[in-house]
Image (cartoon, rainbow, N blue to C red; front, side, top):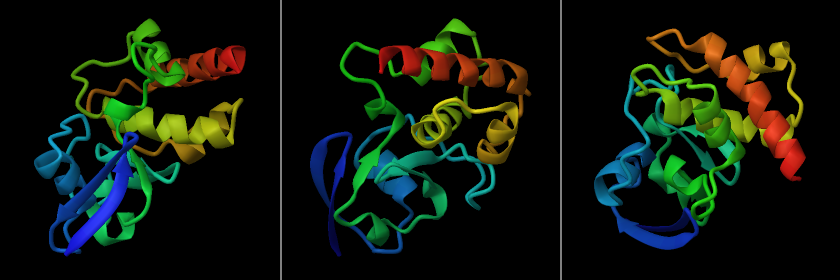
Length: 155
């Protein structure tokens, strides 16, 4: 089935089974490798990307639901050479250890900050529920608060 959508600002049409998880379309057909496979059950969040600005676990999101939508992956989060506030904060706070889960965390954070510009620790706990094997949660929390500062300063 042919399915069309915009990804990172570019129109794309793919011809795949409509039940194919969006993750595999992004990684295997469009060769955007920043979105990671973790669990395949929408539990860990490594595959998080945005569909029409909403945080989505793409490993269990059939591509048919992406039709006509705007999709953003970690590769499309920044604007040219300018890092997104979340990416800048992650860099400043030296968040990643192994780094595998970090694109998903950054995408979930960017979506949250669009809705909650000044999150409290409770907001973070309730909205950022991805899993990090390395346990970099403390640094991520600092980076989320820093990203909010950067974003609010640039607005």
